Length: 138
Image 1 (cartoon, rainbow, N blue to C red):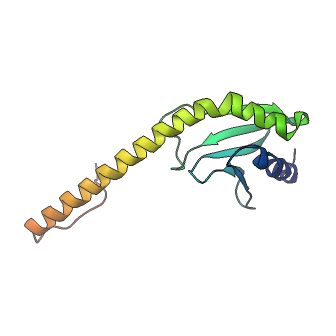
Image 2: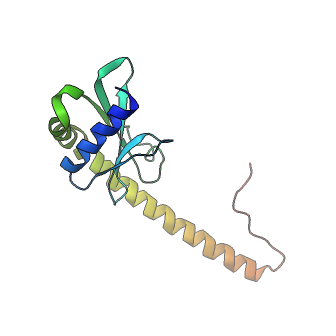
Image 3: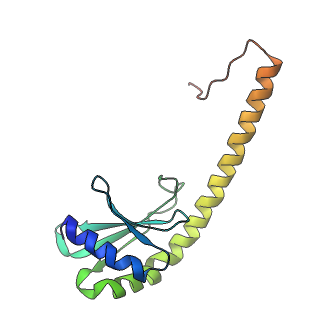
């Protein structure tokens, strides 16, 4: 499959995957995205033009806090409806569980960051000559 075929497939998959829309930008991979931050990357399979790979992504753009990479491959000839059914059955259940973990960890991180910022502000008020440094060196 070439880039244009991947884009066409994503455009056909999006309407049959509840809540997902195709996000196509020339300088990025082809994505299926949801408003809640869930994303699925649609790739061709190297040296297997008859297959497509769907890789789950996380809202923070990272590797999902060490959670396993979730992906499936599917035969393009099966068509968008059957590929979407495969995604719903084989990929989304585990991905949704991992996505909930990532969201929880992102919330915990945001709370910890806010606490550190408040603590740094208090220290700065108590020690006027001090300055705040965002990164700690080794």
